[in-house]
Image (cartoon, rainbow, N blue to C red; front, side, top):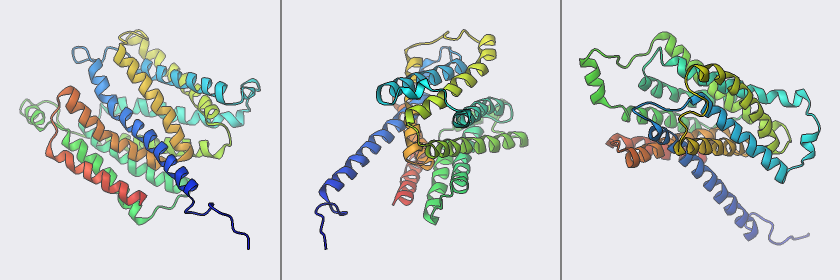
Length: 325
């Protein structure tokens, strides 16, 4: 019998590599949570007289463009430049157009839904995308989840609803009712649009994960394909809106450029999660970012936290324990 030393499960070198990998994932996920959580407070800081001074559609195009340029630079520095010289086949590239179309469609749905419900109802109901992503993840990718994992995702969705409810200003709602102003409301058409929005959101995440994992290409090259379509589709979508709203770079400030840099970094980091992790991890990142968002809003904007805030914190922690134990 041949005995090989220090290669078993208890090998110090192997344990060290595992801890390094866990640390890398911890830093990556922590950075994503911080960026996601700081997005809304940064937007609030850009407002002038209560209004966003820049065109949101042009901001989306700039985010996609920054991700495209970073992907191109990464491919040139670490990949094989010959991959850019040969024209890629249409069969290889075409699948990367689908996520760009789905995300562009959802961006327009968010605007359309505001006519059929109030923003607070949208904030609560949009948590249904956790359920749609989990169902599509299990059905389309063939991933079987344990009962405890389904329970954890239910807790995650419940935490989102509790957080959304805790952020509502009940005093404003009472004043609105007294003044006969628009109150919490959701029409049947609005509920249908929310369900479509949540389905598309889950489908986009699951489809992107499937494409990234099914093709044995460098991630930087896959990102390049993704963001070429992202720039093109969002660029066309923004032409009409920018023409009728503001100049393309009008109202840009340091905070706006920080938003662009942060969201571009988050998009690139998310592709790493989908390539080497799973879309479910993305759900936990988004849920944890709600807590960071609340804390930053309290620290920077002076918003008040209610005791109910501790409930979603506990629910998210329990959900993470149940899913990853």
